[in-house]
Structure formats: C-alpha cells, structure tokens
Length: 125
Image (cartoon, rainbow, N blue to C red; front, side, top):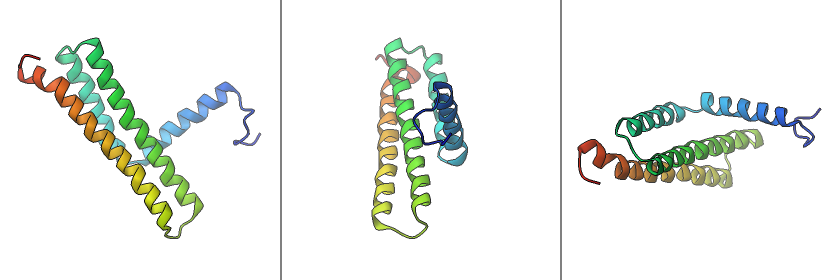
C-alpha cells in the first residue's frame, strides 16, 4: 500500500508518527538543547513543588517548543526534497518557521522564570 494513501490503519498511523518523532529528534541538533532543558524544567518543577496548574503551564510550554521544532524540521526536510537550488520563497518560509521556534522558546523561558524563579530564590509568589 502506498504510504500516502489515507487507507492506513490506526496502528500504521501511530507507527508512522513515532517513526517521524524519532527522525525529528535524531535529525535535529536543536533537540540536543530542547530535550535536556525540558527535562530540567520538569525536574525543577517537581523539586520546588509547583502547583498542578503551574506544572500544566510548564508542560504546555515544553510541548509548544518541541512541536514547533518538529514542524520546522519537517519544513526543512520538505524544502530539501523540493529542490537543492536556492529559493528565496523557501528561504523566507524556513526563516519564518525558525522564528516561530525562537519566539516559542523565548516566551516559554519567560514563563518558566515567572513560575520557577520565585520558588527557586525563595521569594513569596
């Protein structure tokens, strides 16, 4: 059966998604930064005993950055499949996708500091 046909089973769809996750993680150096930071944020959240709502917000931030990194990676792969020649529209699209990851990471870091900073420093919050 053709991989692009929609008649794949649910098990096949999940298998493909996990394969894609592995390819995205292994193929991108950014994940070597994002994953350890995500793990550290999660562990610090447990250590300082953030509330369930605060922990949920931290997890949403982590998910947002990782998901956008995967989308960015998929666009990079797709652009390489389309052409190996320089293309101004493709460059703009890739730059915009990279900017989305950058903004997500920046604002996630700000949210992390707002939630974790006072608890780490012992400030009332």
